[in-house]
Image (cartoon, rainbow over all chains, first blue to last red; front, side, top):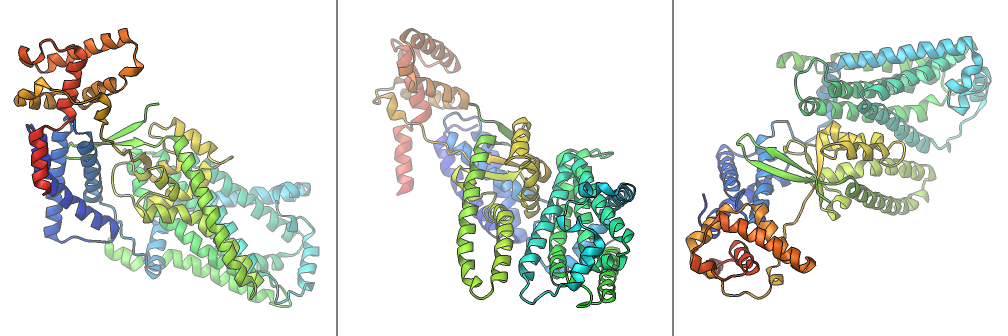
Length: 333
Length: 263
């Protein structure tokens, strides 16, 4: 009970200001850590401010004080009760050595679903083109792939790509375009996964129909040499983006989880961030390879070299996702 | 129009609230940010022209990459660096906060912004706007995924008591213990009601005004009963003004003490 509100404010104001000072320091430096003594003092000030808010809360003529205290307590509450790792010092080496592969494996079930959806889509697309070649225009939305594969191969092999070709521009376009496709695949997880499933299936349909088209025209080697160098990274990236989208959808649906939606989303927030950051970084590499390497064909670069490069890259990626950071994972367990 | 609110209760049982930003205000903030992004991109494109003298391919690549990085990175950078605010949100006093009142993390900022493209489908903010209207906490899909809300920072202004007319003798001031009880017993809503009624008296019809003043005065007389000599012969309007004076104006003793402290 407060008898004299003015005296009460006069007495308590130094404590509120002290709390505000500590909070401002913590908020400005995201990675700041407090000593035990400082933490105790912060907790004491928070409890005192909370108690003061309780007292002022029903006091009619002090809306300013009440508003100020509510904001102060809200800020202190967020700093004191935050249990998630909010460290922002990002180490690329740490990210690629441990964080990304560990997160990938933790959510690997969603990846298998993404892979199965793409494979089923590929089978569907391949079968559709095989049994109905006229459907090519509907299945393959890229103009340069609509023609006869044999003629395209002849043209590509005959073309003499000059050093002045706009590889940089093409590379930048590929990086941003593929990242946008990945982001869309992930973000459509918000549609309870329906959008992500459609995207993965549709990507599979396109891939399957292109593969069947080139194989049926006897251009398997060209196809492998063209697709493998960049596709061995690009396609897994789309799958990982789909994996993130399915993880998000799973949290939204919450099958068999007896925790509220907000808690479910809180649990997967960091995993989504890690998966999508990894995808974006890998796609930078895929864009460079596609523009500066994939577009060169025999006789400039022998197909065997391209296929070997792409296969090795795919093998390395699979091994990396399977093995990287395992030792630390085992130690932690 | 009533502002939607959300209230949170801490583990210590203390309640605090946020005023939620309406979808329309959020759209305006987005439009300002869009203009800011375009302005930034134009400036960067101008800078890239110099690079094109050396390599047009590299300059074109830079334009494509900068467009992507700025359009995706601008809200992420601003909301993280400026604690939930972009330029548009700052201008309209909006802020992104954690839906449970915890600290806004970089992951949340990242997820809410990267999922924005679903909210933008099929026209700018059609899906996001509809979801926002239907959501009890005005959340678009990205907010739901990141577990964030957008709030409005409202500045609480001191009431302009001078509009109530000159300060006259207030008989209630002779009873400090009853004044203190009145300040304690009257709820913030009751205090706001009486103040706003008096401030808007000119817009009320004479008969309606007399009736409302009568009802209010009767209500406040029941809360704290001042001695008869303090309230005798005072019209309802003056009685209500005296109540507001007690609730919102500082007494001479308090002012004197504040002056001493300030010195």
